[in-house]
Length: 176
Image 1 (tube, helix red, strand yellow):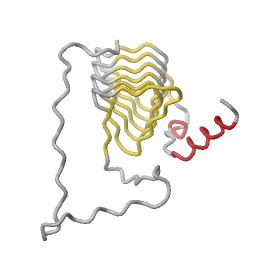
Image 2 (image 1 turned 30 degrees about the horizontal axis):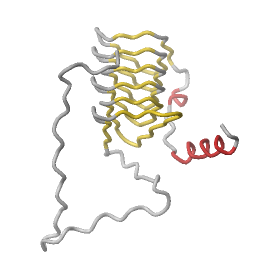
Image 3 (image 1 turned 180 degrees about the vertical axis):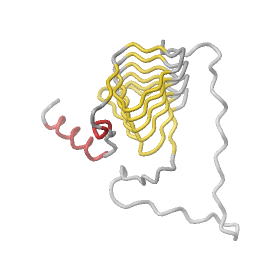
Image 4 (image 1 turned 120 degrees about the horizontal axis):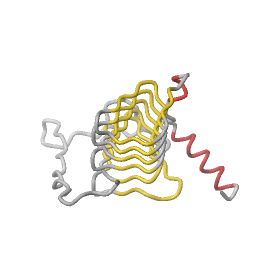
């Protein structure tokens, strides 16, 4: 269900982009990095992250947090929190997926929680879906329960990295 078929070769890597020039032939100055924690990022809403077909992320208590759009074409064994999450046809997630909007084209084994959930014809989902708006295309495979959230606020993904860090530190201090 969550395996890749033969012939799912990945595209060749793109060449690195060249630094922009400032008109003098010298590279333009890089944008200043925010001070403080390396986990502080801009939530400008225009970025995109991709977990490619050649990448598998697994471990105990893994949580991936994306402030913008996250496309998963590889395999993730852990929980996902993001603004917009797309599980591509080659992608799979074993864990909870929580976002404002979720599109599934590949496989998810675990709970899905989002205001808007779309299961495309190639989707294979095993788990419960909590939503405000749900669309299931003909051909999608779904085994689980569906519940419409009474309060849309219950579906908001937690994108605060510091909150997860506090939980992790508490677990470490109690030996869990």
